[in-house]
Length: 539
Ligand code: NA7
Image (cartoon, rainbow, N blue to C red; front, top):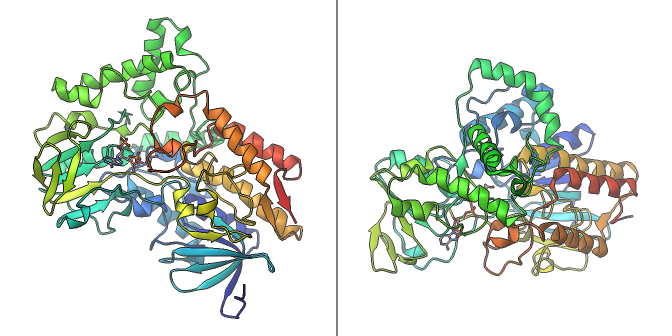
């Protein structure tokens, strides 16, 4: 490899992506005196909130704990909504930028395309869309778990003459849905959000549903000055508790089994969680819910009856909240909803069940289903998800020491020690990476907790004159086995979800996130660190 001319910029660390994770890396490592830059494909900070600016895009974490835990930042910041929408989260990123001066070290509109490891100089040689070549000792992708949108093969999609966008690639200047005939394909978290928003603006919304979303009440509200004062007082404690919960929120599973409780107590428990709103009915519920089918059936039945009571048409109720569960509750991501089930009572909302009438083709003007019906649309929203967790990494041409591309190495499944590094790819350290807490964890929590592990590793290496770190194949394998052992007894394997890579044709089926929860994950890291970074080869 010969890329050593003087025009090539050299850095200690090159971070890819400027969401929470990337900003944390830049801020911490820069303060420690290292040369760091972020390359960002978008034109502003925000990561997922840059790309996902579709109508209704909103964070499903309570705003107060969806921010960095630095007092200097949170003391002067207030989200107006309990669950802020994308524009408020972007305002937060602007605020962080003003406070921490992040942008001066971010190269915007610059997509990393390839990276090749120079074994002589122990550096990554990175090529980006602006034509530049950059050398860095450490390459730290902070891509989030949903940076590669997935558009399924739908016949005729290219022939459509109207407006069509994937939710994760929504135009920055927006699409006005007012008075439009809108189709939404997909009812995951993104689909549910678009549908609620479009229902109030569009002339007509037709939802193309393959699997109903088992959505739960958000409990959205505007925060009053009294709320803000109470939040400020509680924040230090709430931040501190994030590290000790399964998913990095400030609530956790109840250490009681639903199956051990008399019906009345169990139902009272569900009622309380339902009332409190947010993910509590999912992640603060009885501890056996995601393990025990009987327990899960109790939760499903409670959910189903609550939802059906809101839908007037019994046929529609059966489609949206089937009598018998299509999959266990909570093993696909439940969306948080505000009026999702109510809008189906409106005359302008229509549901097409793709199991009965699949899409035959997209036409120039709309969508034709297998029963021969052609519906015309002004806008088709593709809320069809992402090649999650690993997809953002494998789409880059990252070449390891023996010339193997990362995508080829992981063709039959990902393997990465602690979800942080993979053998044969030295000095490549993932934040929010495969088989780390990633998509099972509140973003800012993970950006800080897992992010700090990466900072520690980089700091340890740079300060001790080490030049290389990579995980061993044995450690990678052991981590994959550990993850498989953790997910095995759960009900997650009973649904075709992105959590298991099952939404992408041909993708290996495995848990893409760490299913042991944040506390156990931190223990595993601490164990490795205490044993001289066991599982890593440092030279
Ligand atoms: P998801 O949750 O992966 O949802 C994608 C949706 O698109 C889901 O309802 C899919 O149905 C549907 N889909 C995918 N392919 C097709 C085809 N070919 N035909 C019809 N429908 C299809 O993505 P989201 O963007 O909503 O959410 C991703 C994460 O972002 C979410 O979990 C949060 O953590 C934030 P399926 O369920 O597979 O039958």
